[in-house]
Length: 267
Image (cartoon, rainbow, N blue to C red; front, side, top):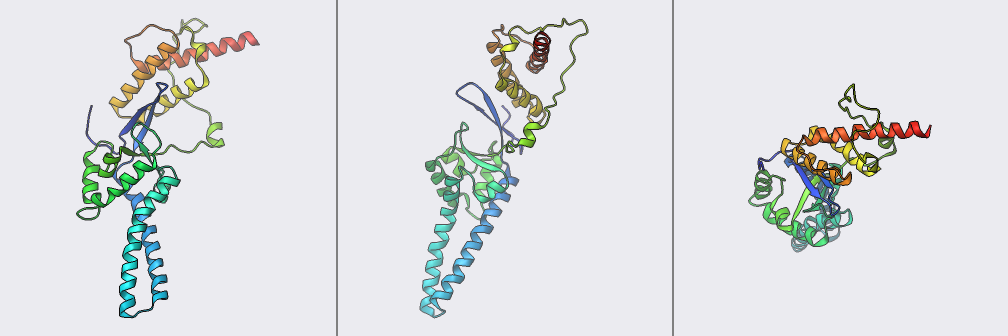
């Protein structure tokens, strides 16, 4: 498998049901922008706290030492606790990640837990070395899923979150260009048992056909082969050696034929 990093590197997850889900690993640019947002918030919190502490403690030499000590403690608590707190209550998101539509997941696509959150953020201090996330940036650049050292240690990955499902999106017609049937094809479906496909099956096939051009060649080929194998098993068809994508298109096209036959019979 090609290990060259890519800003659109797909992260493939196979669910216990055998369904393959495709995420897009978050790259350097999106993760850096999210970090900038988070650190602007952290700096704002620290600056506000410094003003409040200074106003309460006064400006004497002894009080200045107290202010510096309190500020150092506060900086550690806020810098470390900020990420742990938000990633815990927002299930893998901070304000910056939420704005950029990023989310931390466990490897394998599982939701991140508090243990992984604590570990990945404790390692942030090492990722920051020697300056401005030096180690973290190098690790993210060479890792195919752009994981920093904290992610590798905690077994996490940051991915782009899918767009939320809204009524407007549901009501939009799904347009997938399928090759036409042969002129001499019969009016009945050419795929046995195609009526067994469920709404969830169809949604998965349509999702793949709509997004396949966004995937890298190898990921696209692997996902198509997996879906074709699942389809053959679901429809009790023998294994085949043809192009998986053409097979998926063929099944979807013949499903529409089967639905048209049913509609005519009901009418």
